[in-house]
Length: 424
Image (cartoon, rainbow, N blue to C red):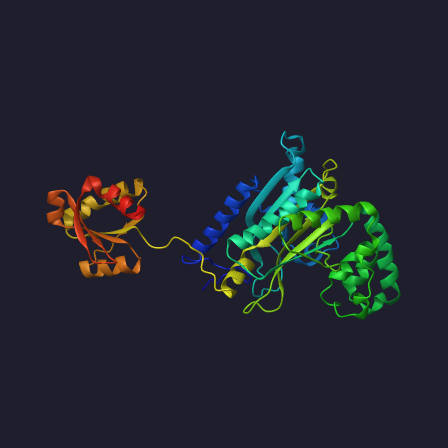
């Protein structure tokens, strides 16, 4: 029987995994500069967490979750996104009582959604996300957006477009909700079944419908910006002001809704436009969720965050022809000739690796010519040749593969020799 990889998943093989490692390290380094601390949550949670945290009117909860019962009859779900799990941990571990506030967290890990697999959209995918909880200062909204923009820019991406909107506070959203119901209700039967259900539960989600996006009522729907009260307007203006101060260009799009029920006030998406990547495409998004911590059982706590897909990021890098400066090749390849040198090889390799040298050797008893070819294929900087004569003299013949130059180096100096050459 042949076994194939499940649909919507992928094997990340050597040659590609180095790119993932580079990107993930970039995320770790950037978050350290912004003083965000890493959190690692379980890959499955109680199903009710996502129904409450993500929103039971969202496509994620209604159609896309991987849900199962364990042997105790408990309903569990593979996490479809990272925010709900992070907030659950925030509440459960009483982070609201930590000395340093706001609590600034980030995560990098796999998520799971049962979607139709397509380019850049997998059933198992990896998200990098940040969450800042405990402050309703608009300055931290701008900080979160700046972190996301910096991440893309430091990887070399260009043609980025930041789109922002305000969904308003509770009062503003309530007034907007009533206006949306009044707008859509007379013709709601012309919309899909999902939108008909959303009319009373969360009419804002109708604006995010992919099926009815061309319906004429969409263009004439009341804008949230028309229903912002003074407090919401002031908040939004402050966020925009901070972005301008940081020289981060943006566009305001009143139709930007985001796909999760817990957003309020600031919402944003980062898009990319360019050859090889089709039309303007969303790379990441996020926003403020001031009621989510309470929904999951915690105290009144404001929060804001974003998440992005590593898969979509890699697509964007490929589309713009950006080669990541991943470390490839070996510092050295040990070529062993003869039985006694072969017995000595493991210790030499261990000593080199203990001193930080990236080195490998032959384990198939190949001839010298084949071993030299292996050194070339592995892109080694040096070939370390150890034969019977070298062993007897306590030396290794070092050949610089780029130039063909050779010199003899004592065993106890080989690590320092390579490290010195690497630093030149």
